[in-house]
Length: 112
Image 1 (cartoon, rainbow, N blue to C red):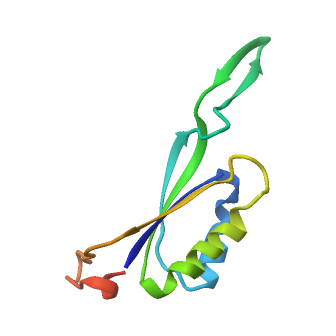
Image 2 (tube, one colour; image 1 turned 45 degrees about the horizontal axis):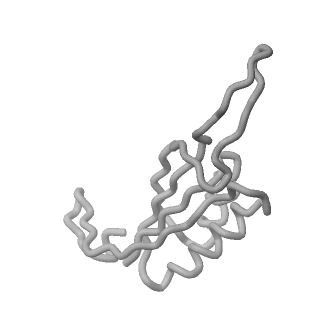
């Protein structure tokens, strides 16, 4: 089992959700986050004053999937979140040692 964590632009959420639904991914946790990568933020003009926006709004998606779904999940996120511009985001994949469904007590891939 793997935990796929993706950082994407907020306006791409609907596209990513649709793509994941099409491949059979059933559960996603979404968190609103702020951060920056190589772009280091940008400057904006507000009421005649210029200020620096250091942290840009992003969405963090966390998706627990079986080993057989990892590649298709990554492909779905990559294809649907891509704008071709800087700041499209990143995908991280890490191992899940154990998963337990609290309601039923199921464990492993059955709990996903």
